[in-house]
Image (cartoon, rainbow, N blue to C red; front, side, top):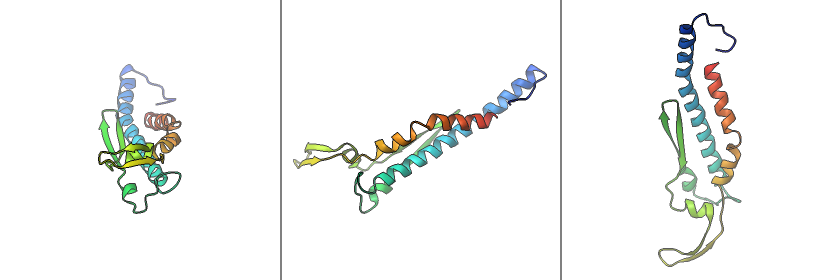
Length: 134
């Protein structure tokens, strides 16, 4: 749309409508790509120190991406149902429900992955949207 002259309001309206139809898929693709990168970073961080040591690979494999399309984009959830995830990320000190006592230090693997992506995600999303409008 940039640099193009419109002779009528109808031409401009049609161009805006057409551009708007491309924004949602472009934003959704950007969100999905970022979610996949986040999943890969978390899994890499969960492959040994300073993150958790996951020797069997089941914990790393438990991290999944779920994309939820929206009208003009998407949301993504990156997570796991592994019961040990919270304790590995945040640590745990005290007795559990079975009376076992732990002094487990945190092995952050999610927060460092988010710290890598968060500063640049808005710019990558804006680039995708501007490319769709372009």
